Length: 408
Ligand SMILES: *Cc1c(COP(=O)(O)O)cnc(C)c1O
Image 1 (cartoon, rainbow, N blue to C red):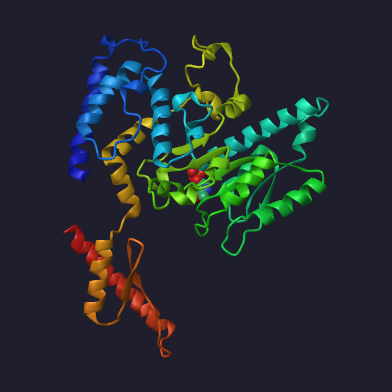
Image 2: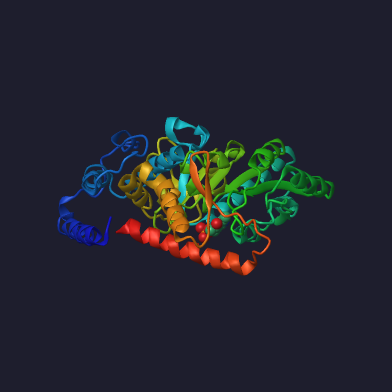
C-alpha cells in the first residue's frame, strides 16, 4: 500500500469509526453468537495471494462486529495463531485446530513469553515434586531450581530468571556460538551432583549477537528425557521460517514445550505482537489460573472457549489479532515470503553486470543451488586491506544504483 492509498484508507477508517459511534444505539450490547462461531466463517489457512482491502473491511462488518469485542477478539486470535503456525509448519501439537492440547497466544514481547514459560515450568516442577514428596515446601524447591540458556542468549532470558526467582546458568556455546548437548550435559551432571534441580532450558534460534542457532536436535531430546521444559526463543529469526528454504532451521521444535517469535520484528506486523505457542495449554492455565466471581462466565470450563487471561500476566487484552489478519491477507503468504527473501537473483545479476562493466574490480559468480551468488575472491599478493575497503565502497555504490534503477 503506497502513501496515497494509505491516506485514503485511513480516512475511510475514520468514517467507519464515526459512523459506528453515530449508530451505536442501534447495535446489540451483548453478542448472540455461540462459542466457536468464528472459525467456520474464515478459511483455515492464510491466503497465498493477497486479498483486497475491500474484502477485508467487508469481513470486519460481517464476521467481527457480530461477535463484538469478545468472543471475536479471542476467537480470531486462536485462528490467526493457527494460520501463522501453519505458515511455519509447526508440529500439529502446537495448534488449537482439531481440539488438540496445544495452542497459540499473542504476548506483548518475547521477554514476556520467556517469563511466562519459565513461570509455568516452575509451577509444573513444583507440583510434580510435591506430588511425590508432600512434605517439600515451595520455598525449599525454589531454592534448588536451576534454568539454563546459552551464553549467547538475549538478556531478557536472564531477566526472566531474576523475576522468576530462580538461578539461571549460562552454558558455554561452541565455536559456532551454538549451545550443544555436551556442554549442557556437563552442567546438568555438575548441578545435580550439587543437589540442584534443573527444570528449564531456553534455546535460541537466531541469537542477538550473531544470529547463531542452538542445536535443537541435540538439546531437545535431553530436555525431554530429563523432564525439563524447553522454551525456544526465535524472536527475530523466526519470521524466516515461513520460507521453505529456511524451515530446516526450526527442526527440533517438536521437542519444545513452548516456542516464540516476534512478528513485529520481521513479518510486517506493527509493534506489539509476539507469537507464542505451547504444546499443552493446561501447563499455562494450571500456573496462572484464578477465578474471582466477577470474572466467571456461563461457559466456564465447558472446554468450548479459550480464556486467554490464564495464558498471560495481564488480565485485559487488546485485539492484536486484527493486525495479523490484515497483514496476512494484504500480503498473502507469497508476499510475506518475498519480503523475507528481499533481493532476487535478477537484482544480483544486474549488480554483477554493473560491477564487471565498470572494470574497476572483477567478480566471477556461481550458483549455489538456485541462488545466484557474487563471489569476492582475493588472489593477489599485492592486495591490502585498503583495497578491499575501497572495493566494498565501490560495490555499495553500484548496488545503490541498481536498487534506484529497480524503483524507477
Ligand atoms: C529482540 C529479541 C528479544 C527481546 O524481544 P522483546 O520482544 O523486546 O522482549 C529476545 N530474544 C531475541 C533473540 C531477540 O532478538
